[in-house]
Length: 113
Length: 114
Image (cartoon, rainbow over all chains, first blue to last red; front, side, top):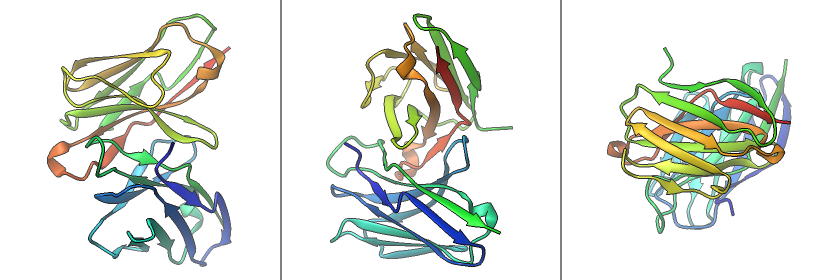
């Protein structure tokens, strides 16, 4: 079964609002990553947070990680119509094969102008 | 130029046909992956390869085979295509030296099996 699960499945907001997406996972990890996918395109890496980090920022992105709850959140501040995409979390599995990532089903974000 | 390329970008084929999807990369990464994406199911790993002599099955390898012809090339074959293999297929690479498993994706191949 998939390691990561995003919540909500779909999110619709207005430009300028903040968007928050959550990810839950099942096993111990070394790091957690977030990816973005524009419709029908390949995934693009956004940000990585290591298991010993609690928060990380990159531009308008803020990621948090709570290893005790096995959960992460991705916050996009001051969203723009161009942020419309699907967002996936991906984790490794500390007890399993290195080099493999496990992706969730994604959150579809729609930002209305 | 794109670092990870896939050919063809779109393919329509008939049940029972053998087809090959190709992936090439110029990133110099040792690790390569094939995923399929179905609506609502996210990405599922088909096969992966950590170097030229290494091939490993993923979650859903039945009905698929792969070939790692060189460090830069990783091909996915459907020996006898069936309609439920209709999906979006992605190739990805990663660099083990970075120790982060960050993956770099190609643009995808949209495959339709009639």
